[in-house]
Image (tube, rainbow, N blue to C red):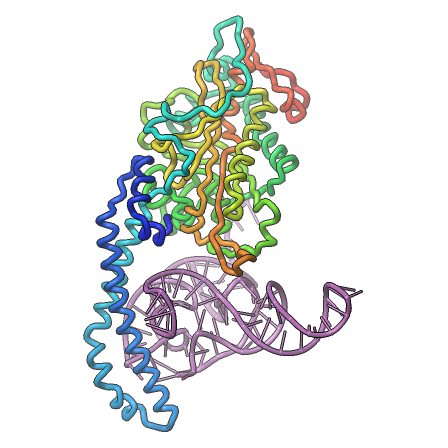
Length: 431
RNA sequence: GGUGGGCUGGCUGAGUGGUCGAAAGCGGCGGUCUUGAAAACCGUUGAGGGGAAACCCUCCGUAGGUUCGAAUCCUACGCCCACCGCCA
């Protein structure tokens, strides 16, 4: 959520920034609503103040030994005058506040100055390329052909068990998938200083609101039956970041660089609105696994924290020797809550294309304001909003796709990357 | 599923109709003392919103209700704890 004070102060600047995200901020509506809120608020407040003073007076008079009826008679003219209006004024103030909140809750974060102009992913700007796509002396297959030829990737069974966009893996392939997540967790906990978390895979609506998936993107998540209003998590970002919700961290709890969490979880997405896209294989599933990196940091640290966190995700790709490129998302491609996002795109020989495997974002104080996630700044002694950063380190299913396609051999087998062999009991290839 | 207890500030915890935004303790901050630190002592210290300011409003799990007035009484709901039942 945006800082309403900042919006008030310079609505045009906010609207211009949001326009780069393709969002039309209704300045006139906002200002009219804000003005209504203020007048309703002032009116309700002054009536409440009068009533409070009158009630207090009764209390004082009773305390001095006057009877309650006599004391009430003393202030009866005030009470009678207020009584008629106070309920209506309070309700009006509440109603306008709800309207204003509703408007503000649906306004995305403003993009960082570094965010390039543009509407689609074609306008994203490449920051760097790492590694060289391998030249095959045969025609490289895509991961579906590789996995099905092994008899270890079974979309048909998944279709029977559940439906489309699910998969069944077996044998060495299933093991490789599991091992990828463990490799990533090891690197992030032992080498990058993250604390591993195990978290709920089901969350309440407050948590989804906190990170920005609600109220606007309800259709992207799977909602559970029942009156609790629970949802399956679309990403570990939701349960992990919400650990900070309604908390005030002591400065010492943040350490030197802020709090770093890593969690391996399944993710569930309805993929509504992407019916035709990536229908083949593991790229776009309703259920997938992800190792997620989350940092909760002091505001002045967040710019650097995003660079660092993205580096941690890149480290995994480098250790697996998978060619990738890093792009900075343009305004139109940027997510709702993000101020700045780097996407890491891995080279997939089967598609002859770079495809997203990690998305690392700085949300500044946008999520923190929605969550009331704060720290006590020793310089001011006051609670101030944290900044939140997160990114995939990495999407496990897509990493499996990348390993299969980049390490495939002409005989249909797949070499196990060096970094994974200790986790595979020394196995050199799967077939 | 049943019964009982509970939900109060950064934390622990007192408060059953009237200067209660709320005792006390812990923690934090400032100071005295000390070569320095600790201890001790003194002072200070909730959050959100409005206002140029004085100052005002809201907040004691959530939502309603009673009342001139609610942390306190009533109703519903949520959550936590304990025990019983059931299940793994």
